Length: 411
Image (cartoon, rainbow, N blue to C red; front, side):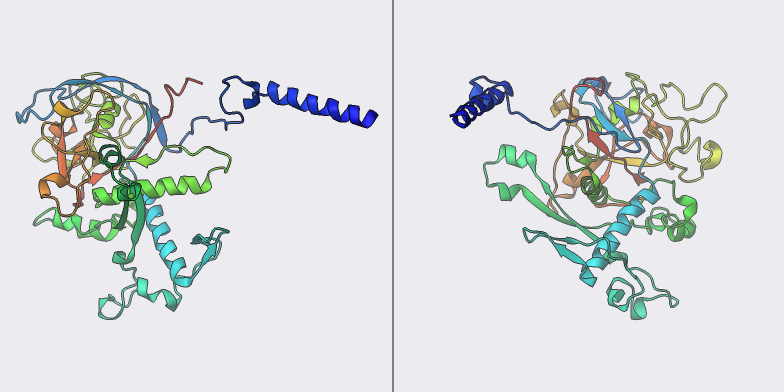
């Protein structure tokens, strides 16, 4: 009898406990219990650009009368942005990862999970002198001076991305919007010679990407596809090492043209330069960015070519070289009248050009100007472009990560 009474009391106690914990049996709309907690990440090497409003467009006279940057008021969701352009050493981490992943695959260093999915066993140490990996290196008459040199054409990165715009506008099956890419990711070091006729730049072709002297300089010779592949790899790298209990966050990506201009202004609305303006020199006459002063006095600003990614003073958001050093890829497609069509909330004009599309549809927006440009291209409102499959010795990039929430201080 006592055992029966105890069992009955235990049952009713359990019912009361479930009801008090917000169980669906309570009959109340209380949401799903035991949801994971989430706090904003603090990405290494990135600064927070808070949500806000800005007037995009030319901050000074449109000297070329292009009319491609008409003034417009827009609002932007907060995001994290790399405080510097991606450097040679940071991009080299990507190159090494791709190199080693291919080598492990050739050596058969793979493991299989309970679902039959294969992944690389990174715990196994590689010996790149192993003859099994010879296919990754130049052989025969392709070898130079007896050196064992990696064939950069072998370094290909495979990834997938989802076409959200297509999925939202075209009523086709989900698989039609899953895109597969394979990209050769090694920088085009020959651009240092190809970009300048009758100019001796061979030392940069041989050394700029590999020599330790240039580790902290911005990577160049990277086209838009390679920059996009880097973003996917950086997301994959973060996901691999985050805590299993941590909620997945947004992906690393290239900034939109509007995001880039908003960040470049550093909170100074209508300012022609990241430091405000209206001049490219300070009160002491010192140049404030790395570009082509006057009629070609390249070293006057302290840099004959590129300079370290954190050279000069940052803008008020803490971002370095948003003007000069290297021009930067954005995710936006270049169309002359884009501002007319873009929404005023998170403005973004994108077009995913196929290989069969006309060349005019393969233009991507460049921002910031570079070490070989005149000061007009340094202005925060100046728009420029390059073909997405083209690599130059004066084009680099930086990445962003969308902030999920109203403000970083909004907890």
